[in-house]
Image 1 (cartoon, one colour):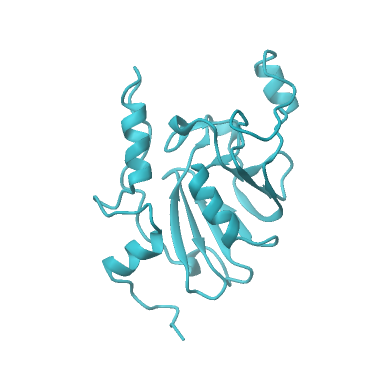
Image 2 (cartoon, rainbow, N blue to C red):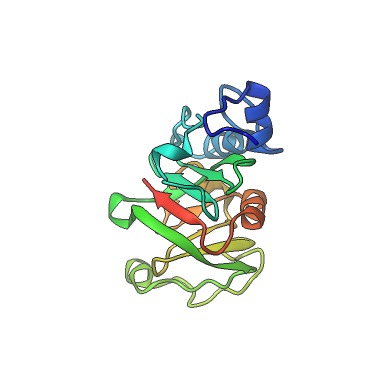
Length: 198
């Protein structure tokens, strides 16, 4: 049985990050894709390049019961620890576009949905009345392929139909992942998984 303080080798850490990971320097190809995509636009990339560092779950949670998710809104990454301690993964994310839209604190996953539906929140419609009132599941859905609903109204961890957002301040409050990453996290996380946004 692994001990809580067991150190990971670079190879073990790379395996823990999953198929889309590579140390370069501690950036995943997913983060590099975000840099390449954003770099073709007129504005500079907005991601934090040194955020792919390991963290200890004990610094943020009292246990790993039902698993634990830490969202680092400054580093724009999501950390996941399984309940049994066998799995630790890091994913690049999009985060809210402004401080006023950023919610921090503790919550849990309350629902999991494959092929989520999207409706703009009342605040989103006030900011942009031209938004469609509804987008069904499919390639145009802003929530991507999977969504993990949080205990806070309107807040989710979800995929995206616009990969340019990953690694940037680009959301209306939610945490976005590449569709392949949210698919992986969706299989690992449970209803009741602890979530902390910092």
